[in-house]
Image (tube, rainbow, N blue to C red; front, side, top):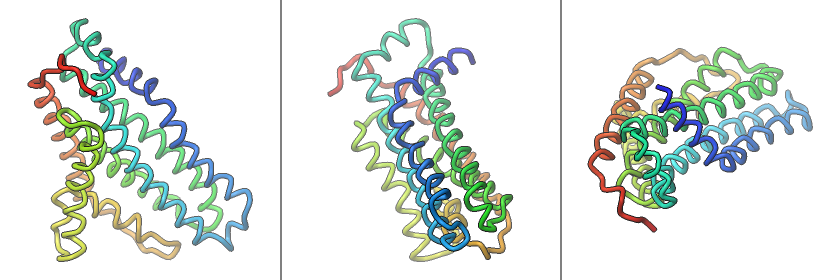
Length: 236
């Protein structure tokens, strides 16, 4: 466990600038909360809040898709593994670091949303439930990106992740039903995107449980693939 946490800390240190940029978007919402009449502009603020969730997913794919490649390119990964660290530990450490980034972002987003949207009358229990959905959706996207990053470069890993996530979404939009639950990004984000100040909501735990199961499955699959990769070969 200590090794996993150390690798997670190294991931946070290596990705500090992208993380800073990600958090700056939350500050934009905070600044708008100070600059505008919250009750009059509440619908516009809610749209910006929803956009922040999209940024979380995009950054999760970016960070997950580039993490392994960057470490291989710098050869740091060979140094770490030469100290007796298992490859599975390395993957779990990377995913833990990614999860910590997303937890921090969603917490800051939820805290800011509670202050800005809460003053406009948005129900706070609903808002924090949406933060849970955002966290799971972005962590699912990031975990899948890590799987592809074990054998693809960052560009193709990100593209493959986008396609793998996008096909079930398009199928659900086109045909409806439960097709979106194959990779439950759509059911996780559907309530988020449809949220309004008048929405009557209820918790749907099926996509949440599916997302948790698929996050674990992605972690195990990434470890299994990484165990069989020749990482001594240099990458560009």
